[in-house]
Image 1 (tube, rainbow, N blue to C red):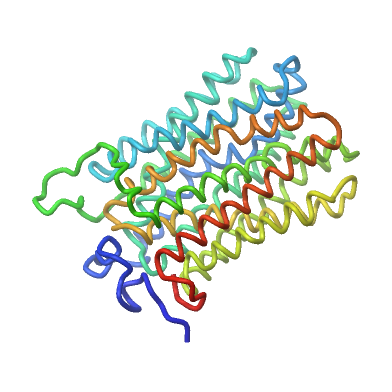
Image 2 (image 1 turned 90 degrees about the vertical axis):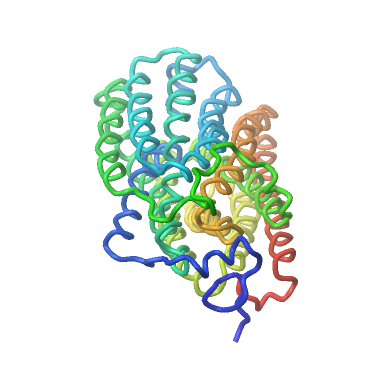
Length: 430
């Protein structure tokens, strides 16, 4: 039987940070715990369900309001949104650890809905940047750390499964929002499409605000309020540093297909409906990918499973998408397999980070790692747009190679983090 390291139930902890789990009590479920998961799901639909529909916005902007802007310029809209979500989170995480989720979730929910409402009147590039990217990004930044952090207060041994269920939100939103937009845009126009999305976000805000809560005390031995300031000294832990670097490369690889797959299919002879359906296939597969590997990660090790899913991303991008060309069936196969693999990665990132820290400091660790990753999200789509500027098929091949190689570097970083934690033996539970 494989050795198990890094879980208080199965043997000695990896370090003192993780050992705190052995003296903390986790319900591992119950009505309150699963309501927290549902609240987290609703909050994350607002943040990641929308960005997983970026390909629809990108395609619409490029032929309407922003027809005179190139792909790289339009790409900055989505990259800046994610950059703000993750970069601002470095301050939000410690505030969540100290004061809890209430005010953060309430204000974040309102900002996300308000950004879509104002977007309905936007017609110029700078207006879209200020509303979608800046205002919406700030709302997402306030929602993201509490959505993940509250789960860490209720689950330890089953955290992979619980987080995986919550993170299906991005895939579910990525299925539903494109369908809504495809139906509304031709009939109601862009303004009312955005307003209807804003009302949906307000509806999602209700369970998020009702159910997201914490239960563990702040990590202060003297019962003082923990510092709300970020602490970059945690990067002295090389395991955490390599895991954070791996997230950067994953973000660089991920948002290329999420943003450009629809345009790729259209440029290779697929009709618009079939092109949009690819995004639905990808997001539907990611829903499965966020739950099943989360269950397996709790059983076989969180880092062990994320390494397998990153390797699958490398294989699908370079082995299926790169030679796909005009083949509709190959593109469908790619969308399904990549959706499963990339969804697994996104669901396991917060769980792997949680394995490296005390659950009461999770907000600080998670937000710090995602602050670093924000530079990957900021540059990914603009780099992709610049590569497309090469022109023709060479531009598309350069774009796909960039995505695949980014995932290869992510694989190396996570492998190094695991080796530093438990050594080379693949049988060790970690």
